[in-house]
Length: 202
Image 1 (cartoon, rainbow, N blue to C red):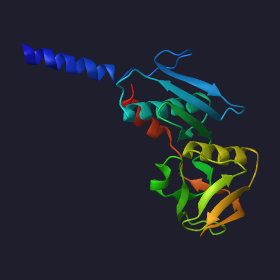
Image 2 (image 1 turned 180 degrees about the horizontal axis):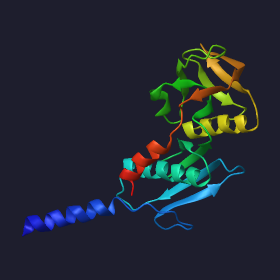
Image 3 (image 1 turned 180 degrees about the vertical axis):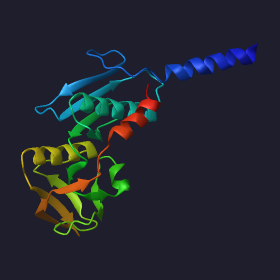
């Protein structure tokens, strides 16, 4: 009898840690949308019960962005994670997004404050950046997260900018460069990714 009771408690706690997927207009369980100036960019704020796993909350936020982009008529999307509860949503008509097309060293991204040190340049022939350059400012703003960095690139591209002014540190010297914005093909999520998220977050 005791074993059955323990199993029931485990099942109930598992259910409690995986709340149903739902959009809300207030602070109850689910997610809310904060709209920005354009229809293809918004913020998702997720409010889930205590005990919800970090991975489930992350997938919840990703699904919320994907569903919202689909509702708005976009078949492709990308997500910028601000923290475990806040996600920036970016919607696209096709499978190409604007990007700096560089990768950053992971150990710098997990520090506080974050350091954006370039680990890899993704075949950009006209880049002004080199390995181990540290990004200090982008468009005169200091990025504090990958979500913030994606937003700065997205907004620049929305305003038809082809270059971004960057301030970098290279071998101890601070430099200013005009970095071209690249088209990153297949750098977005699509309906197949959204379907996979739906199987995990119901």
